[in-house]
Each structure stands twice: as structure tokens, then as C-alpha cells.
Image 1 (cartoon, helix red, strand yellow):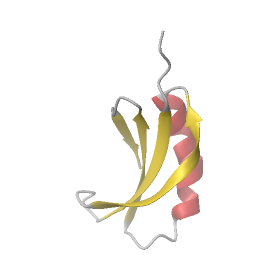
Image 2: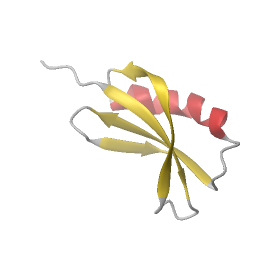
Image 3: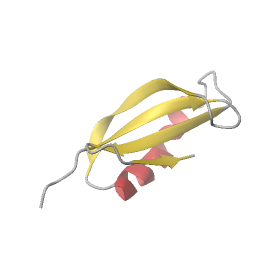
Length: 70
């Protein structure tokens, strides 16, 4: 079984979360999207001062499937 590399990217978005821009990449990798999503809840408060109304974490596998956590 091939292991996927999962990375977390932080994006700053408008109120409707339709226009988002790169803010940061969180150091680390996770074995599953679920573990990345769980960690994103701990990481997002670190970006509360970003100059965007909404900040989201995107957990993405090496095969480009994505999941968003707000």
C-alpha cells in the first residue's frame, strides 16, 4: 500500500470563502486527512491576526485531493 504525503496550507479568504490567498504552509506531514484536519484546529488560532475575514486550513494529499477545515 502506497502512503500519501499530506500537507497543510493556510489560506486567507474573503467572507464568502470564494477568493482565497496563500498565507503559510504548516511544517509537518500527516498520514491521513483526518489527522491533518484535527491538527488544523490547533494551528488555525496561530493565524488569527492574518488580515483576512476568514482563515482556513487546507489538507492536501500528494495526489491533490483536498479537505477544508474552518
